[in-house]
Image (cartoon, rainbow, N blue to C red):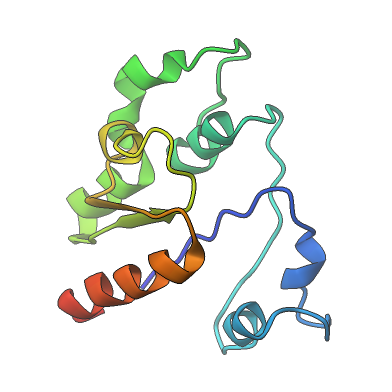
Length: 134
């Protein structure tokens, strides 16, 4: 399985294996054998622009609009590429309730789960992953 965890406006120190103050959930993830965690810094400080660079592997436009959305390059974004080559399924789970269908349309996620709080989101994510036997 592949887990990409996109965290904004938080200190990457929480993901350091030597950080004793990390949340129990994050700490349990980074302490597992074979887990690699790293920090990535995108040059354009907007969520969609950052996601484009991470998931699609190309620089985002420096304009304030999201012109990448109509780009032919979006067919090579990671969720679509992994589905095509390896049969992976993908889900994007988020607490930002704006633009709920954009991750599916632009980046190619099979499912998008949206809820206003983590308390509502996590059970839905757990249920979906169980239905996929993941």
